Image 1 (cartoon, one colour):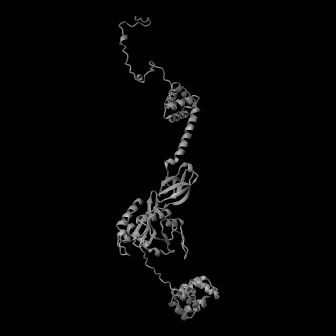
Image 2 (spheres, rainbow, N blue to C red):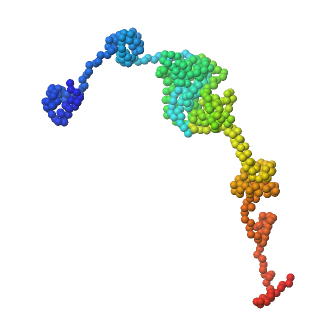
Image 3 (tube, rainbow, N blue to C red):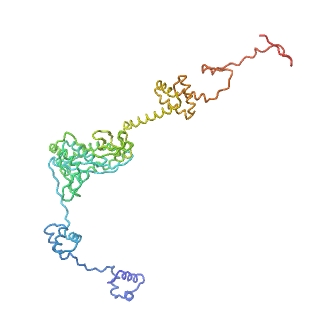
Length: 500
């Protein structure tokens, strides 16, 4: 037997150097017969003899045990260790997998009496646009086990409030409650489900089940076949309602699926029962439990901290509460379509739930006390600046407030004049306006403007009465009356005097 390096050298000498078998044999120290053999065949490593296993003495016993009962590897290992076996669980497990044939699992066809059971599950579809963001489209499915009557509802989430609300809506659509609900091990229904043990239900779902009087049957982990009816229904919705349908506004989906259920899904000839679900439902509906008088409150409950801008953050959005609750913790009740915030049992804020992201949702009344305090503070600051102008400012303010509804606006304008003319000139204008009983920011501005304007040069005509007289047009004077026939005096002679 040659090694791989010798085989490569042998091939190279034959194909590249064109040596004969005898020449190659002499060069490599091999028999010519061996060279001829490996020139004809691909390289094959030497087969090693299998090493003995510590399990070899026990293999017959293991086969006998498995014929009697389908023991697990752990049980087999425990038996062998009592007889001195020193190997580990991996050795035993590998051998059992070799000798025990893996049979195909058989499933029973599920059959239920009217009103006995319903199965529920979630389906997921593509991302859809919601405002400025995108969210995964989900749909809840409940199928009655006997009639295969179907209920479907679209949502933008699969959280607790959606899960419970969809159950309630399905019960209301069916007009009753089945005796048992079969579900998978989603956290909204089951917290944990150890193999072979009873599931630990989500307390909220357990309370919901107690309210409506149904039992919960959680499927075994990774045993989707146990709720095959609803699994098939989810696929039916995807292929027969959603596939090829352009998804527009989310708000249009549930009305559309309602029509489809009524006109298509629940009136078709079902492939398993060979009957229409709506016909079998006639026998099943009377067997459902009656609905409770008071519907269950399906909200998810949590606490929410109010920040300094009197907002609480919920699902990437900010919602306002009354400003007095800034810095406080409130009870949050989150529904699919709205959210409520409580201080103890007192409802302090309620908003429609927004599925966009990064939005600020405000009730204007919540900010009113803050705005009112700010307005009063601004007024106090404004009045303080005005009264500081002069001793007469208080008297002027009192008369202004009596005469003007918009006295704040007039004060603001007068104070603004300080930046233009200075405090001293504004104070003097206030004193003059008080003398003339002229109470308005326009009067003050006019007084200041007139004093700043340069006086015009005096002219032959000065009007102090009506403004329209300033536009007076005077005709050109007629100078002919001054003409005379007397000769002009000689240069140096005194002028003639004209008698009146």
